[in-house]
Length: 222
Ligand SMILES: [Zn+2]
Image 1 (tube, rainbow, N blue to C red):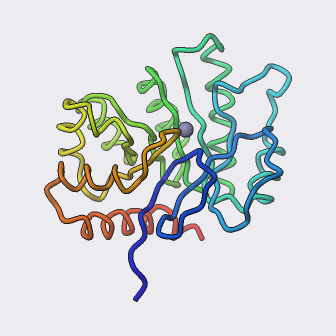
Image 2 (image 1 turned 180 degrees about the vertical axis):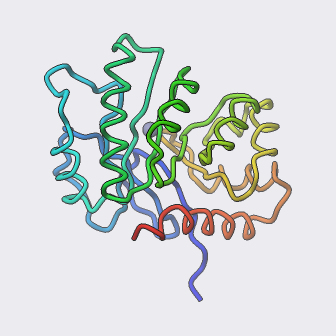
């Protein structure tokens, strides 16, 4: 039987390692001529990359998803720390959610200080595909609201040093989380080691659990 891989649910690193199954993020409208067909991709328009002249992005997103054989739409989301008007962000986010639903792909979400707006959109546009909140670093109250709305939370490098976040991570149900490297230089193995230590479970059991979570999110749409 093949060994259970390390799953990195969200990364910007294009290097390919054999023991790792990663979802590599590609930004819509970015030059992606160097893509390697052996990798798994997510594609979407990040709120940081919204430009007024590209307010209608549906056709581009559909064709890029097909071209890359992307398995998720992302990272997409809402960010109150940038100057782009929030309503514009919400419209672009919602149109990408609709595409995800149409193509039956899970969504990888970037959210900064806009969790209540995010949950309102989730309620209004019930998507039936998994929502994965990437780079989660907030408190347990926000985490509980996201879990109640059936979101998954993904944790990265911050669990190595942020003690409060370690306590939050410890309380997240085992069938509701992922791990990721995002733009960190750290290896996903280091993040798994720390996660196993915090959760007080064996590394092998952690790997199996995340594989199950992955199958629940992704396999039903393949
Ligand atoms: Zn990212």
